[in-house]
Length: 281
Ligand SMILES: NC(=O)c1ccc[n+]([C@@H]2O[C@H](COP(=O)([O-])OP(=O)(O)OC[C@H]3O[C@@H](n4cnc5c(N)ncnc54)[C@H](O)[C@@H]3O)[C@@H](O)[C@H]2O)c1
Figure 1 (spheres, rainbow, N blue to C red):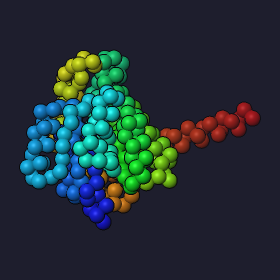
Figure 2 (cartoon, rainbow, N blue to C red):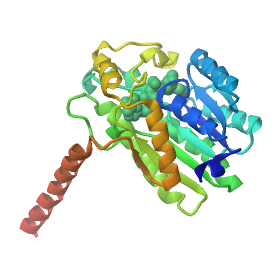
Figure 3 (cartoon, rainbow, N blue to C red):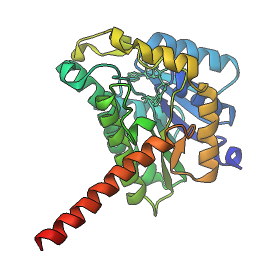
Figure 4 (cartoon, rainbow, N blue to C red):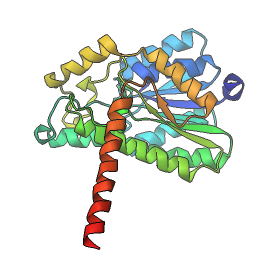
């Protein structure tokens, strides 16, 4: 049983003040884990932490900007000092960059989306995974990508966001290969639409230009609010995938045909190349 495995073990969840991170942190704590909640927004983070503590759950919070490597190291130190060895890292914090054609994006936004969505995972690989491998106990290293990590939505101007999430999928695949003989299981969460606060530009750190608002991505907030799955359903899906040792964690299969069409285009590329090589040989 997953509960027996997780009870008394220690987790870090980033992006834990809202949405998927908040819901998953709650579920993990309800299973008896000690959970460090990390988020760039201290006020909602601390409010949520107190709310869970008042339910008797073993959680603590540390304000963390995941795009800062020193902050990730400090978060890991905090978790170890507070609870002990880290058994689960849910590298989940992320930001949206939908609705703006890439040639119109500011350089600040390029840096922001790359640093929060991609580099944060590298920082966690650098500062957290070695600690987990060193203690040698079973654990989970779970990265949140997106269904946009496997296809670029043709209607949502989401090239830059998808680029970052492709990178998260690639890092996760590499990590799963590299650590297959270890006690750490690597998984990648690829949600379709989820009804969360995704798209809120208030979290843009000062060094990327500070809080921002991109009205062109308001469709994202509307769409996920109306059609998105509940964050708690996603949290339950993550737990079921942990129980069943799944690498790719999807939340529905709505993108299956788009991804199949993409793979067909790739196959066509190989077919044409084979035909070309036959001609020139
Ligand atoms: N909601 C969706 O439809 C959807 C779909 C696919 C993937 N995702 C991914 O799920 C993850 C969680 O997003 P969500 O949908 O729960 O959105 P959300 O906005 O509700 O939660 C994200 C949290 O991350 C925090 N955050 C932002 N920048 C940060 C930083 N630099 N450091 C630390 N924390 C930071 C935010 O303050 C927020 O609390 C993201 O990686 C997102 O890309 C979401």
